[in-house]
Image (cartoon, rainbow, N blue to C red):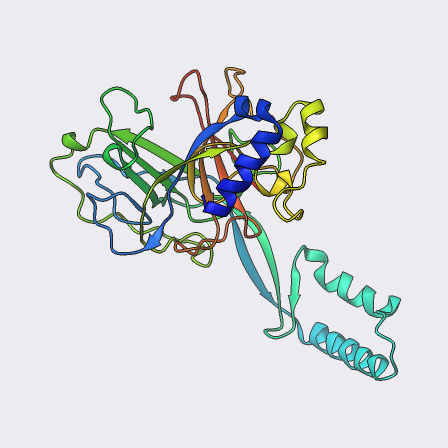
Length: 324
């Protein structure tokens, strides 16, 4: 948290002391490009993985980009549409005629997007892999590098992997989830005596979005305030009127610290508040946030973030995922 943000949070809490009851501690990971090794905490770096342990794979349906060449007839029809639109623009009319709109609708009716540079129709379609797709390392954290975080007894190493492809509402996830599937492993680093030299490469991957550049991490603890939608209604109404600093900062600018973080509060900046419940009916808590951009160079959702939720009653219960 920057000094300016810390000052504004202090000003906010001075105005609304009851906000202290809602503080959670988040661990910002602050990934920076580097060359981490298997014995380092990292984003996108090599994992300290037992050579005799099966590597996780994804067997769920992927959304795959299919490209279909346009017929000569369709290309001619689109060329005529382009010529007519150019003529209308020269006369100051940029409105698509019903006739031309019908041409676009007919050609894209197969559920895709027309690419007039390659003369193809692109569409995302579900495709079940013939064999499991190897997951790739996303995050590795050693307990020595993340003070203040509770670890299950007998473990001091956390590893997170994902399938580097999009999935449309995979099993176990709520409706409207679209993104990678995630696997999580906890282990004792001292138990890994014969480490895997190199992980298997995925058979297919959307490397434009889901292959993180290797980064080191520099974890920093920071207090985290909830999204305004998580606040009690009366408090929410009052903080909505608050303007801090020069009068331009609002509560929504200070809640939910952004970036890669362990713990803290989830953001609901794209959708309304979603109550993420476990299979045991317990309300799940935010475990990990994977952010777009920065050193790792990922693109999650529409340049947003992937939020991984964990059951507070039993960490062995299935994870739930949400993109914002």
